[in-house]
Length: 472
Ligand code: BG6
Image 1 (tube, rainbow, N blue to C red):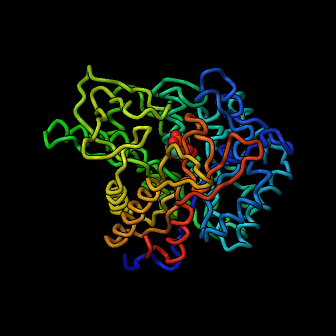
Image 2 (tube, helix red, strand yellow; image 1 turned 180 degrees about the vertical axis):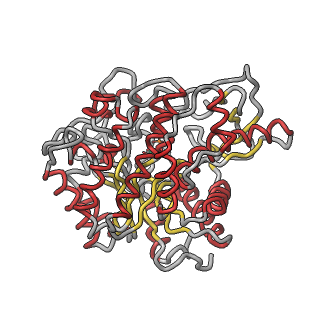
Image 3 (cartoon, rainbow, N blue to C red; image 1 turned 90 degrees about the horizontal axis):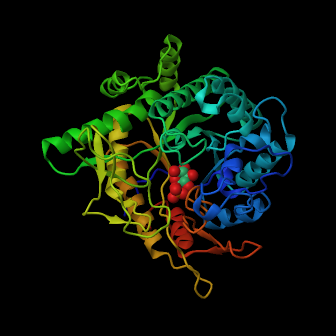
């Protein structure tokens, strides 16, 4: 592959506070909704939780040394809201801020660009209990105040900010599928909370720009491009409906400031659409223009087919890793997601589709005309240590093909800022426990001292970075 990646391309990797830090009650940290949820019986795979996780909180120097050895250009991580504001607002815990200074300074000293996610799902429990968290517009004020603390504290050191991680996923799983806290199944509530996330994004971006902090700001959406199963008109229509009620619906409100008209009307006719106040429209449109980049988390594509009014609804997904448990899932009257014979699947039945990444990048770039940062991409697998090695050739193949897709997309005119894999070390998967691994660095969760072992993919990515994508 000749070299098409720009010199300052951010070859990076990512994590999230709850999935790595542990130390869930240390140094004054308050509880988040996840600290509570994981203790409720039957909510996570075999009751796993992030009380200790990879113990990154105590091993941050060791983890940064590994990142340096790999040559990482960027490390994306999230900040735990309740380390900074244990009750969600008001009293600031200095020790929380100091931890992130230590992490950020360590990265900068080693030539690694910090990419900070302000929110990766660990809402302060106090705010959930007080007013239902994302269910109430009050979240905008509390979130903006939290973001301002971070900007004031870190703006001289951090150039890249991601306001929200996958707002489409945490609202869908929390309010429509009842798989994440607070465990509700109500489509109208899902759409309402999603609207509140868009407002949060908008007000935080506005604040960032109006106060003149230097740096770039965006949010990361989980984006799943969709194909029609066949050329049959009904399947093509299902694909169109999917875009109107899913992809364009979740993206347009963030990056254009408006919902797509067919999609919004569809929900509105059924009494499910969120209420849009006149002041919402203004701030959403303004801040969409001010948003510097679009973060994309890409794992897989979807294949769509006709689903009648009496068709299938939403199904739970594979959390065990027993391959072959793909189940069709859909919204009656809109679309149904089906198995794609042309693609390979992971053990968790996620479609492996590097071409889908290229399509996604091109379609997003054409629709919104903004730079894109791939903030997550990776393969969850069962890894094994044998004679001190982890031979994860399947992950190398996955990442290689997706990097090639980035390369091709750049060739098609996409302004791509960087590519962050999910994840740097193995970590906790919210619903799939510790057995679903994504890292370049294996963490032996069976051993008390949680040893780190470099996988084969570690050396592969090291070489990719060293040659700026040429050796791929
Ligand atoms: C994204 C999230 O949805 O995908 C991560 O931002 C998550 O936090 C990742 O871990 C992989 O998903 P899963 O369910 O396989 O852990």
